[in-house]
Every structure is written in structure tokens, then in C-alpha cells.
Image (cartoon, rainbow, N blue to C red; front, top):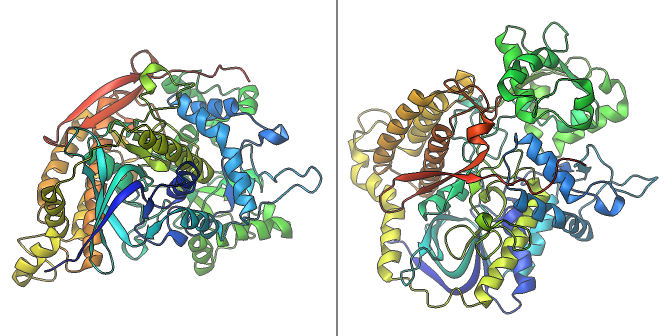
Amino acid sequence: MAYKTIIEDNIDVLVCGAGLGGTGAAFEARYWGQDKKIVIAEKANIDRSGAVAQGLYAINCYMGTRFGENNPEDHVRYARIDLMGMVREDLLFDMARHVDSAVHQFEEWGLPLMRDPKTGAYQREGRWQIMIHGESYKPIVAEAAKKSADEVFNRICVTHLLMDEAKENRVAGAVGFNVRTGNYHVFKSKAVIVGAGGASNIFKPRSVGEGAGRVWYAPWSSGSAYGLLIEAGAKMTQMENRIVLARFKDGYGPVGAYFLHLKTYTQNCLGEEYESKWWPGLQEIVGKEYLDPDASHVTHRPIPTCLRNHALISEVNAGRGPIHMITMEAFQDPHLEEIGWHNFLGMTVGQAVLWAATDVDPKNENPELTTSEPYVMGSHATGCGAWCSGPEDISPDEYFWGYNRMTTVEGLFGAGDAVGGTPHAFSSGSFTEGRLAAKAACKYIDEGKAEGIVVSEKQINDRKAQIFKPMEHYKVYRNEITAGDVNPNYINPRQGLDRLQKLMDEYCGGASVNYMTNEKLLHIGLKKLKILEEDLEKIAAKDFHELLRAWELKHRHRASESVMHHTLFRKETRWPGYYYRGDALKLDDENWHVLTVSRRDPKTGEYTMEKAPCYHLVDENE
């Protein structure tokens, strides 16, 4: 087959992925690089891509400093306690001190933010959340990025980063293919900002069969933020810190607005409050620093998200499920009932449709909650991602190597899900992180650090052969199908994904094993991942859509491998309710109050694991 090669040369800043992180990067790159060539490559269409694609009904990270509501230090303390002490405080503080200005720009661009008619401040549903009419959130933000970029390439699946051949460990651009035409795209660039998504669908989802694809985190988020970075040899951090969400059953509808704004609460099947029953036993696992069950403590510091999950999981395991969200009281108020439905219709339509289809009216029946399968991401209430440099004014020496948000690969920057150790960034924080990365990338170029980059024709041609190999493999062996879609010479992307999800679920602490794993299981899982990797060399794609699925699967596989190595390395249960190490059930601050860092050698595929200090730069007291 002949695939047309399209080369984009002389790019200054290449943005891979145009969710909120990528759009922020493109917007800011133009400000600091008036004369620079800025190019965006996006797998979908920038107007409706990323986790905010369907819309959003709250901006979950806004300090409100101008209204005297919060300071950046407050946000660091909040994220630190929610992540059981494990965050990069320099990166968090840096994001928090800039995020408000990003939100104010959103409003200037036309995003409707709800305001308190008495005070004029933005209407809050919680300490960090402000309410918006967000059906068009992404198109509004995308417009600013499109005006900033020299060119936006939609429908480009970026599969690999190009590496400089004149200087080791320096990035030189990226390659990928158009998912509609099959054209091979080569982007030669001085700096690259990865704003791609984290990983859904690496663990077997709760919804299977006809419900497959109904997950909480965006189903098209295929771990590319991690697949691209790991393959390039960038160090990763906190990849064991996967997240499990308490959500409305089967539709994965979010619960935050219900708890915070509608003041709903949960009960077990007997109509009892159950969370407090589990605090004394849980305190023995995590200690008093992270969980003091006294009511006085709960009022001034929220219980970490993972520990609330632990209570829900434990109650169900004790035979007192299902857990119900008590909506019948709030929904008697017509205004609150309308807000409850609007909350889904503006961002999780599937939940509203599911309730309608299954005759669940939350005004007359309390709907069920459950816990999701795990997701791997860096911008929600979890901190997976690359080990990145922080800002020069506040980062300790171990956290700083020249340019803010630059990974351990020169010229390669991260934003959003790609950056490790910065939980609770959400949409506004991801956009802000993109801006910070772009400013640093422009400085990196201006200071001459990207001069003399060499990319050979061989590297370009080798990547092309690698990318299209699944289609060539299908062409050669397609006539050897024995029955249905069974072929002794290849697997297809769906078969590979089923295998990966089952493997991760059973060996790395998925939902079907109550999030439990141990050293023996993880070693078996790593062996099976290695065998799967060998079989992925024989994956077949019958068309460009399947080629897209094949490369999404390869990125998911690489992300899964990193998660498995990190989970094995951290010999403790740091986040009960997200996962459990059955052979190390207690939190161990003496040995493991550290950040975990890994690097996969691109040449050998071998992982090196290390501990990095977890510095607390913000004091405890508010």
C-alpha cells in the first residue's frame, strides 16, 4: 500500500493533543512566541476533543483569591491531604497561583459563569468548584487556540515522538497518521508539548457487552500522554496512583454536584449511615494523620476521596449493598430537581438517558451508587504522569532542571494528564499548565537549546513502516481466517484490548477483585504483559479505524506496564479505596513517604525504579 507522506518542517512549538492542556499551550505559545511557528496535532477535532468534549457543568479548580475565598497554599494543603501526602507541591502551587487568571479569560471569551447576585462572586457548589453553563466550554476555549496556532491538524493520531540524532535525549518532533485518509504526517519541531489524555479502558470496565464504552473518563483517552513519553525514555512518577470513582451505577454520572450543591447523602440498603462504621478500622491502616474520625476533624479537613471509597467498598462487601444516593428529599424542591437533571444533560447525557430507560426517577426512587474500574490520569483527583521540572523560584534542586514542566527529555514538555504529581487541576488547571509549559518551551527555544537538531530519513521511514505494519500484516494474512475473526497469524485490536483489560483487572487490582493485588500477582501480570507485547507485534488492522485502535492499544499497553511496575515497587497500601496491596496492607510513612519514579530504557525495554523525596513546601496551618 502507498501512504502519502506529509512533512511539516521548521515548527517551533508542536502541541500533541488539543484538550484543555493543549489549547492552553497553543494560546500561551503565541503570546511568548510572536514570530514562532506553532502547530497543533489532535486525534479528533479540536472543537470537541478531550475530556471536556461533551461539556462540563462546573470548573473544579478556582481559588477565588480576588474574592478572598482561597489562596494557592490552601489548594496545596487540600490536594496533599486528599492524595495521602503524595504530591509535587511546587507544581501544584505554581498551577494554583495562575489558575484564576485562566478562568477569568474563559469568561471574557464567552463562557457563562454563574454569579452570586448578592456578592458578585462566582456561584460555588463547593470550596473549589464554581458553576458554569458549560455545554460549549470546549468550542469556546478551542477558538482561542485555533486563532493562536499557525495550523491545526485534526484527525491525526500521534504514535511516536521523533528523537534528535545529533544530541542524545533531545526531542525533535512527532509522527502519526490521519485516521480518515491514512496520510503519514511528520512534524519536525524544536519543542514538543504533550497534552494528550490519560488512560481509560486499561482495566476491565464495569460496563461490558452492549454497554462497552460507557465509562467515566473519556473512552477515547488511550494513555497516549504516557505511551508517547515512556517510549521516548522520559521518567514517570506516581503511576501507581490510579483513581477509582464513586459514581451513579452504570451511567457513571458524577456525584459532586449532588453532594455539594443539592446536599444529598448516602445510605446502605438498610437506610443506615455507614461511613463512620469503617473509620476506626481504617485508621489502623492509614494512621491518625490522614484519618481522624472525630467530627471536629471532619469539619475542617475533608476525608480523602480514596478513604470514602474504602467505606463504600467495605460496606458492599459486608452484604449491605447497594449504596443509595438519597435524592428523594432534595428533588421535592422543583429548582433542585431541575439542577439535578441539568447537571447530567450538560455533560453526562448517558446517565439521564439510562435513568429514563430503566424507569428510575430520582424524585421517587433513590438511585444506586457504585465504584468504577480504575483509571490512570494526572489531572483529576490523582497524580500519574511524567517527572517534570518545576518553576525556578520555588522548586527544590531535585525538582528543577531548567524549564518549567519540561520532562527529563530535553525540549519535551507536559501539560494536564501528562504531568505527574499535580492532582486536582481538572480543566482549568490543565489549561493553566499548558500555558506554563508553553512559556517555558518558548524560553527554551529562545535560549538556543534547540539548535542543531538532526532527524534522518531513516528514522522517518522506520517509523512509517512501524506505524502501518498492522495494515500490511492484515493484507498478508487476511485469507487465513479459520472461523469468524479467528486467525492463527494475528490478533485484532478488540481481541487485544479484551486481553489487556482482563489481565490488568485480575493482576493489578481491578474492580472484579475488589481492587486487591500483591507481589505474586503483579509478577505474573508483568510476565503476561510481556507476552502480550510480543503478540502486539502481530496485531492486524483491516482499515484506518482499526489502525487507530491498534495504536491506542499499544499506548494503553505501555501505560499499563508502567502502572504494574510502580504498583510492585511501592510496597505499601498508600491509597486504600483506589487499590490494596494484600501483602502490605498498611500505609508505611517511615519507608514510603516518597514519590516513586521510573524510567523505561527505549533500547532495552528495561525499567529502572527509584524513590524521590516528597518535599512539603507549604506548612500545615491555614
